[in-house]
Image: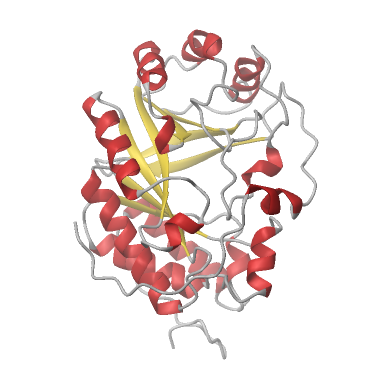
Length: 326
């Protein structure tokens, strides 16, 4: 796929050292307990709502120091102890209701050598018996034989979530993620050839792209690219400050936080592609709104769109709101 792009002159890219130097403190975590877990719903590729148990695992920090990432706040500074991840999974699943889908999100790479010890794969697979689908997250460059090894142990279908972030030709290299769109496509092709499903994480308002209209356009372009590469699902994630370097970029004018309206518009336009499932990430959604009068209705609308995969009527704000569509 080819895009007509107007390249822009971007400021410097911070290196690992500057990103690390500007970080606030990490959370103190127990390596034998997940730092969070929850029960939710998600529509599958047949339009059926499925019950999902989502576990946020505590493990070693990702080796990639992406500019926009704040997931490291809930990670360890050392390799994950062998046996810790099975204990975390058992702890959470014993406290969650029945579900047919399980997400094991570990703030990095499930198949990273220091994150999830390969010796734990058989125990993890036994704990996940009965789940129709197992979803994990992983860096495109770390999709290898370890994925295939784990896949053979599962009863259900394996799905791997990959961070594409953006296909903007100058912004992606500035994110310090150390991937290209070709790396992403190669990872999807490798996984698809081995009957492993994929989904993509797409950023709304990545750093260095500071025009509101272009941010929406590039989000939708990135969603379309991911579908053309072969993924079945895309999740649009509003980019946040709060990790140190993103706050500096915000002060410098190199990052503009997304608005709730921008998320609504990019979500709607991505659904209109009708190329696969699209979800809007609604975590901490209030952070992106500036109107208390219409926020709850708009949040409910996005929740319904996530579950129905259909565009719902827009909310009419009852007050003087510069976000609402009066």
